[in-house]
Amino acid sequence: MNVKPLELHITQDDRIAVIELDGPVNSAHSPKLRKAINQVFSDNILGLIIDFNKSEYIDSSGIATLVEAMQLANEKKAKVVFTGTIHDHSRADPTSN
Image 1 (cartoon, rainbow, N blue to C red):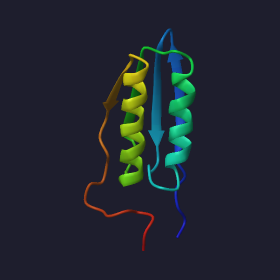
Image 2 (cartoon, helix red, strand yellow):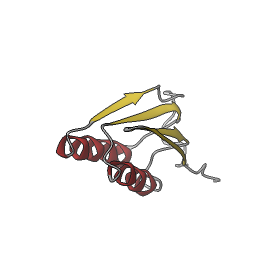
Image 3 (cartoon, one colour):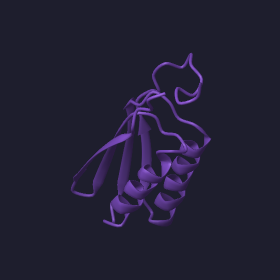
Image 4 (tube, rainbow, N blue to C red):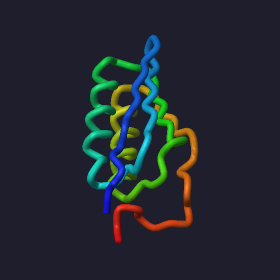
């Protein structure tokens, strides 16, 4: 089965960063998201918006990555906001058979 990769589109304006997710946030792709989150917080941002509008799936490792983002934001006295919806709620993990 051909697994769609996770693409990240990162923008930053002043001290607010936006990470737009395009693809599944699963155990194969969570490290990529984690690295991007750590990178934007290293720039001393005040807020991070994670946009799920183009993401179709998130598993427990993806949720753990989001929890880590919230913990990192708390340490940095910053905020994390999640926006958008996960599309296609009716399917199980699209990467499994």
